[in-house]
Length: 154
Image (cartoon, rainbow, N blue to C red; front, top):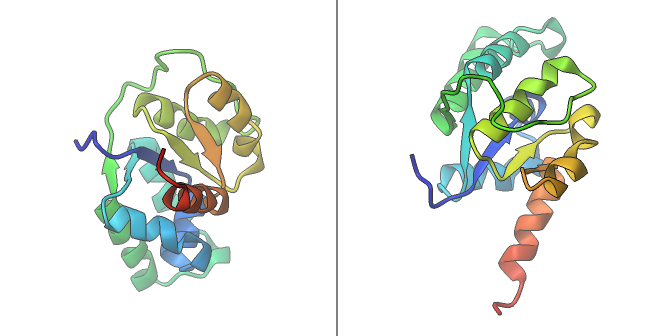
């Protein structure tokens, strides 16, 4: 485990944008993962959701695309084992299916949870205020990284 880089959790929609759709808005995120500037984590429940999402008919992914997406996911996200019991109280997500991402972010001591899901994003102020982690869109995360890179050193 590399503790010198910030840890991050990616929800399934962000993974779709990055791995399946090659969304340019996720290019800096993908580069940071590949360069080891951040460490993305997953757990069994989140990986199972990822596998399920890849089969959604509306995505129209063929077998090769699904296999490529799963391979990329497994190469770039490290499996984080935890017991699923939050070490401290977490806000409840309006979408119960997304609670697992909050639980993983807390268990893995992640700095960020990236999502485009409104139900998760509305909790971002609270998780940040409580000193847990930030919930950001990939675009907001990329902007934050750009600000940090261009800010003068103190």
